[in-house]
Length: 244
Image (cartoon, rainbow, N blue to C red):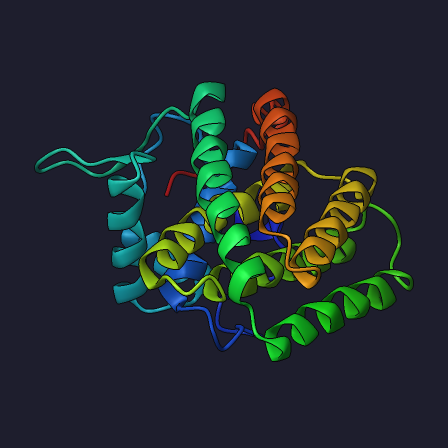
């Protein structure tokens, strides 16, 4: 079984959200493969083969691999092909600890200064998610992907509403990790609880309560921190995946 057959569509150019750079999507797809065990530690990766697999040009693949190297998820040694780095439970914990600190700050600032148009957008976003998943089978890929899209936009809107471009940029960088974990390790029971936590965060922001907004956001991320730290090592990887 090839990597491409493990995904409903290997191409990243189809149905690409306008606000997401192609290199972000390549980064996210490769990260999903690493987290899911399809790219185990020590496996070499090839820019050319990723280009063919994902049906994109060489530039976004090159950019994505450089970011993976910077994030210490890929090891690049001189005159050698890049290889997948080990990714431990401690690494997962650290990623979510950074997120907890950063997004607690964005929630606080958003509660203080979010304008009504963005607040309305968040409210409509949550309602649309609730409506859409009613028609989807629990634990289906469709349900999980719909959650991942909703979750990403929910946190993105709060980050952008905080008033600090640098803080928002740091938050969005770590969002790519979370999306990959969502797609590989979550079921609807966990995500329905997370959605309720979203509603609690939204309520705190709506009521202009920065202390509660901070607490709700940090509690939300802490729950995922524990869950993903315990569940990130997935032994069910495809033994027939060809080297990239």
